[in-house]
Image (cartoon, rainbow, N blue to C red; front, side):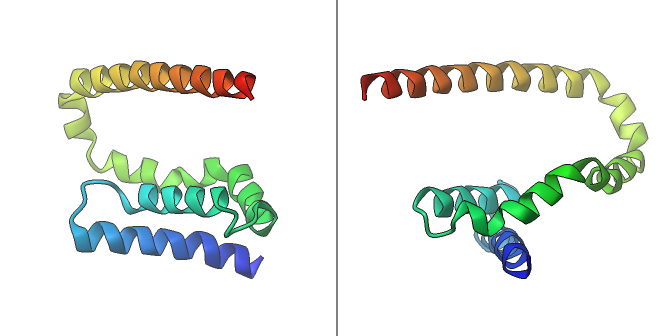
Length: 115
C-alpha cells in the first residue's frame, strides 16, 4: 500500500515538477499519467504493485471531485458569462476525443488481427 502510494504520488510530483520547471502548458498530472503508462508498458512497474491503491482511488473518485467542484463555484460569474464558449469547447473536445479513440481502437484491433 505504501509502495503503491509512493509510486503514484511520486509520479504526480515528478510530473508537476517537470511541468513547472519546463513551463510546459500540460498539467503535471497528465505528465505523471504518461510516465506511469510508460513504466507499466515497459514493465518497470508491475500492475499488481499499484492495483490495490488504483482500485481504491477509482472507487472513491466521486469524493475526489468535491474540492474542484467547490473551487469552480468561486468563479461562478466567469462561468456564467462564458457558458456558451465553455459548452462549445466541451462539445467539440468530446467529439474529437470520440473520433481519436475510435480511430485508435480500430488501428489496435486491426494490428491484433494481423498477428
